[in-house]
Length: 384
Image (cartoon, rainbow, N blue to C red):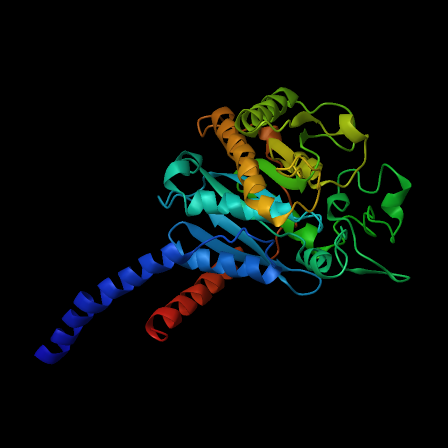
């Protein structure tokens, strides 16, 4: 009788503190590497380790698979208070493969919200953040290894042509605007139909899920390197009903960045910049029920004042990621101010959608979490 009891006491007294110490050590070991552009595997490894080390506030979901069978992962960040149904800011990056700074900026934002939580807790008090840092992993890896200017996915189109432009593949105004949208060999190719790409369908399903659950407030898509904040519409030149709110937020973001770094960011309705065309994720998010929808075209200008556009030198990654975080944080602060929980969303902004997300989100989350926990215990109690 006493022997098993002593064993239990020993486990509680000795093993539990060891596990706690190991957990603290693992938390401290999570470092975001910004001395070079991370590979797809590097991005996934960082997210996996972060989700294990901060399992109380981070849920990592595999929400789909790319054409070449790479995992599409969504990082769901909360403050850990257990409150359900908070409003959500949904951010994505790397719809365009060659825009290497966008995954870096998305990971930097994740790091700020999770690892540096204490100084950014106000951004998570009443909102959750859902971040998809690498929407187009196939194109991203092809850009890194074969053709750095590659922009699209890697699906075959026939005739020796490959890839669809994900930011032309959404349903609103699809294939409208200019002839290249219908050319399967062009980098603007919109696909053979709306949502022909699994990657755009995955983003669509996340949008639908958030709108249907009445949590959707802002969609923010990261791009480079136009130094602009765009808001709808792109497919037509008429203003959206709440253009004033969009303009206020865009100007606030631009002002915060200018005050911090001196970089000039242009706030404007997208159609006023380069004309009208369809198929963008920003227009789609607004159309299906996000009250606010933006594209943040980050800077590609180096510290030496050279315009590098998509490929800033590696020594500038951290500086540009930090500048982009200034903008992302400003988006969050202004959105929280304008859309607090006490403000009801207008019924017209919540469109009931059908046939949206077919996958079992709860089961996916359970499987992912179980796998991460198995890795954690294996590393801590087998390897050590």
